[in-house]
Image 1 (cartoon, one colour):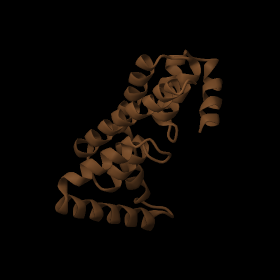
Image 2 (cartoon, helix red, strand yellow):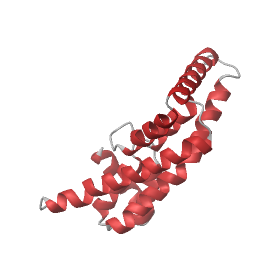
Image 3 (spheres, rainbow, N blue to C red):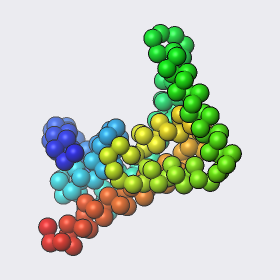
Image 4 (spheres, rainbow, N blue to C red):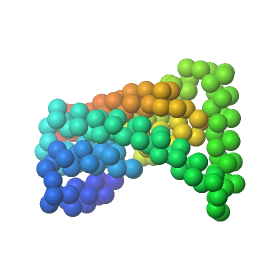
Length: 170
C-alpha cells in the first residue's frame, strides 16, 4: 500500500499542495484515509492538519457512497446480463439486514462502526457504504456508524503513522 500511496502522491504533487493531496487520497477507494495519512507523513504534513483533512474527506464521502451503491444496484436490476445477480444480492442483503435489526438492533450499528474503524485493507467508508446499501440501510441509519468508524480509523491510523514511529525513534 505504501508504494501505491507514494505513486499517487508523487503524481499529484505536480498539481496540488500536500494538504490537497491528503484530502484527495482520502477520497479514493482502497486508499481512503489510511493512504491519506501515509501520504501526509511522506510530505511532512503535521498530524494536527492531516488527521482532520483525512477524516473530513472520508466522512464527506459517506452519503455519496451509500447513494451511489444503491443506484448501481437499482440500475443493474433494470435490465442486462446482471439483472438476476443484482436482484439476488439485494434480496439476500435486505433479508440479512432485517434479521439482524429484528434480533439485535444495536449490533448492526456497532458492527458497522467497528468494521469501518478497524484500519485494515478492505475496510473503510467505501466498503462500509456497500454493506449499508446491501443491508438496506438508508442514510439516516447507515451514515452515523460509518462516520464514527471513519473517526475511529483516523485516530488509529494517526497513532500508527505518527506516534508509533516517533516513540520507536524512527
